[in-house]
Image 1: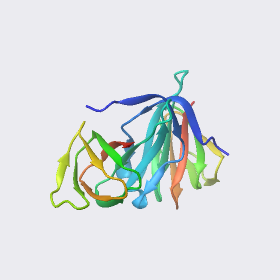
Image 2 (image 1 turned 180 degrees about the horizontal axis):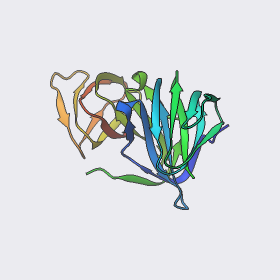
Image 3 (image 1 turned 90 degrees about the vertical axis):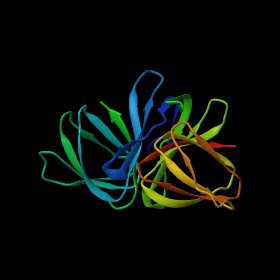
Length: 105
Length: 105
């Protein structure tokens, strides 16, 4: 399973709000300077564009994901992750709140 | 203005989701054990019930608030706070994402 909490981090108080609140995250910075975000996606089907490559780690809930250039939707549940290349995009569909940690690769 | 970030805290990875995602927060624990949450309320009119007394500090955005037992709506903007007694409730109305820090008194 995913970690329940991050310790000794800085957390930015203002949330990141995407798609009219269908996705909300808070940015954190680890002691070594690594940036991540912890967030949640509400029931919806959304398309995200990436700048930096990222790893989406499932904290709770399930999602279906279609990476750009692929033809097969894949499902991910608690503790599972999927990689998204830099300068790419992915479609994600969730039917209950999907909690994640976004690691920047 | 409010602080932009909290340092040296623990952050719970799973978000708190209220009102079908109209309010999302992440819980944090300060080095001294103090618990707070950082959150955002989407455009809506909501009624929150309190267990412990809390202080709602505005990080960004504006809100209108009606505390239980009061008759006058009051407005709060960035850097402003309002106190809510324990075992009480308040109505809050926001027209753009309202970012807050919730301090437990």
